[in-house]
Image 1 (cartoon, rainbow, N blue to C red):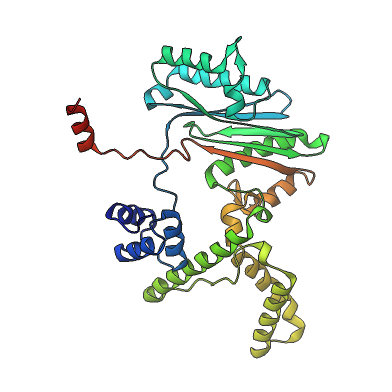
Image 2: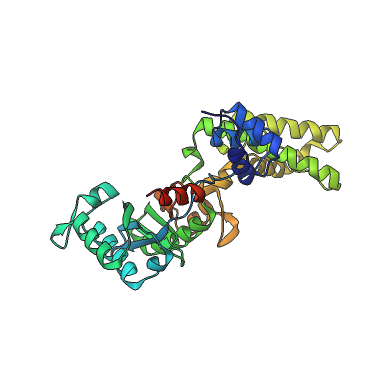
Length: 348
């Protein structure tokens, strides 16, 4: 793979905000791999986390349906070529027809949907008929379904983000759990967690993010020094999975040593260290707060985590599945060369 090119340097600068020379060096070091270059810049404290610039939202809509007893929730992403068609009533009705078909037939992925029969004809033939009527190419790109004691779903009003959630719970708590899952699905649509719990994060990813987050905070502190503002605490860790009993014991011993040096009476150490340990845990679990649903501050009440909000409703509720769609996510942007396109047309 080639190293730095003007096009890649421009793209990396747009993704990370890093300087041109830093982007060039990172691309040369990673042989032009954008993802690796982004991470290298972050670990050096030179860039922020970024999504791939090549990922763009296709047109279309995300649709969900939940069955009557709230035990099954299904989600569909149906793509179209233009926003005009995506807002058309016939297209919106089609998405509802397909998502309900998927749920009725227990279809859980796009391959099974394509192989299914709808209205007594094969799904591909059915969709081709709709394409002829609507006048644009249509693609049923994603289908997912969850089944549990209780499920629920949410689609943002623009139809571009959708979430499915499933949970176990006591029978008596089902109605409360259903309402709560709807609220948590709304939360997840906005906060974009990638996993349910911190324990689901990959250990290698955590170590990599540990270096990157520390580098980000150190870079922020350099600016805060210039502005003569209070500095941020630099964490030892970024996830609760790293906070072993030994790590917490070492932190407590450090705090006690500081209190002893300050001449604080030993009898009040426990009261003081309890608060310091709580703050230490908060400072050292930043990755969980970014990516783990249960560890995130709940948008409906940011004084609680999602996990605490669930416990406050009913301790029997345990989230077992979480799926989030963002319209067009993963579709690579097509690079358009207008001059080449004109030349090609003229040569015909």
